[in-house]
Length: 499
Image: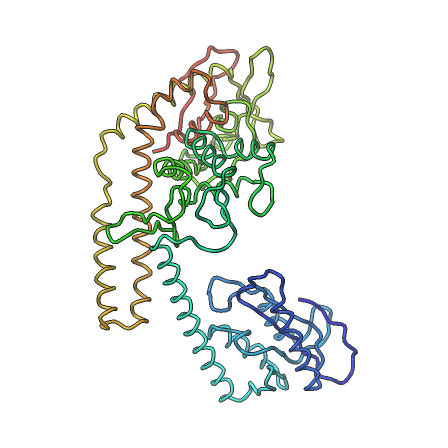
């Protein structure tokens, strides 16, 4: 909201509202033009604008979009004044399309405006009496038609996107990193960098180390910005790397259910990208609750770790109330290659009641993780098929039948689009699950092959090893060893494995 300094005279004080759904130029020129018309309208009617409220780049037809200044306008109208105490007796705007495209929003506006008698309201064409039932009714009819038109436009846009995707044509927008401006030909400098990053990530390297390497080398995004973990994660997660396309969370497939291959040159093969996608899902770590159950997802760990298990080990010493401490163990007393994992003091969220010989803990957990991965590799090799194939076929048959009835004129547009969405979401979920299953099986037999040899040869750095450990387990609970010095006991280390 922008307050407007206007002389305190006898003119009616009003607020001006402007909104645009898509600010393609990102310069706000559309809402500025609307406010210029609003000022002209107010001057023509003998009103004075005391504040300008703006929702730029905000849709009025989507239920999940919050328009902050629209909500602030309703609050102002209900109170009849601004936060500085200035009186408000009405609203001026370009047209009702800018105000609302959902009947509920329009009704809330009318209720707030008419909560007191004598309020005024006008658009570019002139004043309107919202106290009159027929005027309010016409406004609701206009909102209903706007909503229908918005839905039609969105459906046409979705069909257009779907058609481009099924044809394998690239989309517009910012040039994707790794390709030339034609979006089809590989960039000779960027493409090899991205291909190496994808292969390194698939082999266990962390996003953090990749980003740091690119930052140190001065590699920039296509917008000229330094790379961040979020930016690189989105780039690697994009199936465009292997020539595929994702639309509304779903890999675009042909009638046979196979991913459509785009017209652009791929940077990596499909096996590498599927491995990247599977790892990203596998690395969504979760908290371990005090009772040992698995909790909410952990935030992204952006710390550079120098020790194998810092932040992975958890203190299992009991508190006075019977619950375990569960604090992350950290490293201290680093001397001559020796170090100790300890629970932090009480002032830092721990209990300071546990310490373990670092190299011995690392050696035991390493062997346990490698053995677990080799066991999973053997099991995965025996997996014949994905268990959800029949469910996917049922959903696809229902979608095909619904589409045939709609094309034949047996179903209305409203019924078709009201029911097709849920089926498409279920198909998307099943297809993504199938792709991840295939990638996990492939990775178990390929990417994890000879992991013990790579681990012991020194080929993997600490961050790569930690990434592999995170794929195998959620945490390791360290139980107390009793009073005094005691020999190292591996039975007091309890891994919490991922299923």
